[in-house]
Image (cartoon, rainbow, N blue to C red; front, side):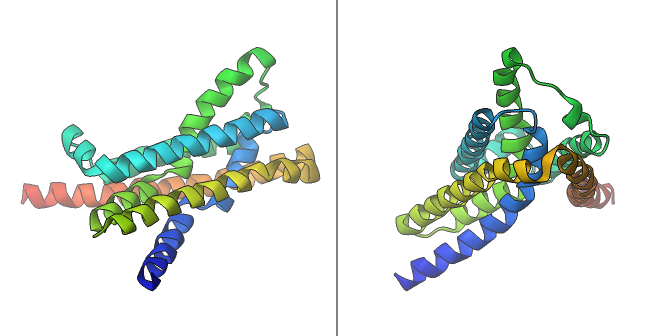
Length: 213
């Protein structure tokens, strides 16, 4: 029992660090600033469910999917980096804040951003996907598998609750505060994007150079 508890703590720590709900919240706040509280809650729930589905999918069949399509986690990091960079550019130039969402378009907007970029790769990013694949592959019993899946659910429930709290924060900081925070987060997201991109590019370039020699 103590071994399972220790394993659960290890899994929780790794997933909570990689998913980073507190780091996701400012981006979520920026992208949902024009939505009401109900639509914001709906967006948070959809994003978390998309992330949970993706994590479960990769945990059980990640290696098979990657081998079948001939792709690597490094390629996923590079794509995630490009998506993050474009999103950060929009945030830095306040394009997201200036986007007005009317009633007819709100459902479509919620569906769009809840899948990409919030669900994937913001919540369920390359790091979390790799972690799910590696940890599932290393499990030695059904008990460990159950703990792994249970911890994934717990971390994403916490993520959902953190995103929900963004409504209260938005009320406190107001529209001006949100725009200031959006620009600051835009810069940070662009830095993360560069790190993502080059962390994926470096191993690929090394493999190319080694194969050339």
